[in-house]
Image (cartoon, rainbow, N blue to C red; front, side, top):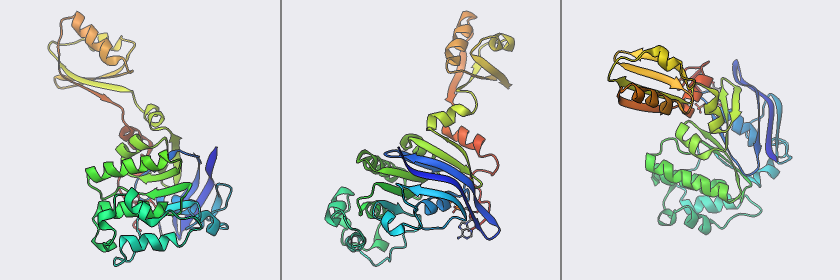
Length: 308
Ligand SMILES: Nc1ncnc2c1ncn2[C@@H]1O[C@H](COP(=O)(O)OP(=O)(O)OP(=O)(O)O)[C@@H](O)[C@H]1O
């Protein structure tokens, strides 16, 4: 059952079109990723979903509510962690959690959150003195303080070192395992691949695809790519005659062969029959990265269309 439905959302900031007809729906209990280049409209989208921004057009429905009109009601079951926390640097971890808990009808005990999110040693520490990873753990704890059914996490792991990022992934999975629907804005393909049940790929204010990570990957290119240096010249026509092979490119002494998921077996068997050795063999699979780049070609990946 869809818990969030977004249809034909539009938003402009002056002349800048931020959203140009964004539609998708999020199923209850899933981790739904929103992925796209800088300036694609991801934050604007989640702000509209969270009732923090008014769209110019289109419709958002979150568990039957209109996020703008029913903002107070929505806040009781939608937790948000935004890129900028806006927390005063002098507030301690415990004070911040107590303050946020006071906003909710049915808050989680702040002490329980401190334990759950591994903040015991930092409960009396001021926000400004926390490390990036600790600030992120506090941001999640704050998003969870109202016992939400839905939690929106906007670039939660940006700026974290790889170990802290992986720890954050475990936390996000714990949230989902507790039955909470997670909307996750991310720039990291590995994160999207590992965590998200489905993804909306947004580019220049439009949704270019909504699919599972595997489904997105399958949309582009060939599933397998192998590169090797044959010990003797190979007739490319022989390789191309194999049903598993879709393309052969020569790169100096190396051959790059694209094909279906069984291409490696087929090519190595053919080479073996001819007593040819495939040296320096490397096999690559199409990744979400490849899909992302292919599907978001309208903007150079990683570059800002316009400064905020
Ligand atoms: N308050 C604002 N005033 C003017 N333009 C804005 C404002 N907020 C966003 N924009 C512009 O709207 C577009 C979409 O911005 P948004 O922050 O939603 O993108 P994003 O995908 O979240 O980007 P990033 O990955 O860099 O955070 C961008 O071109 C941005 O510059």
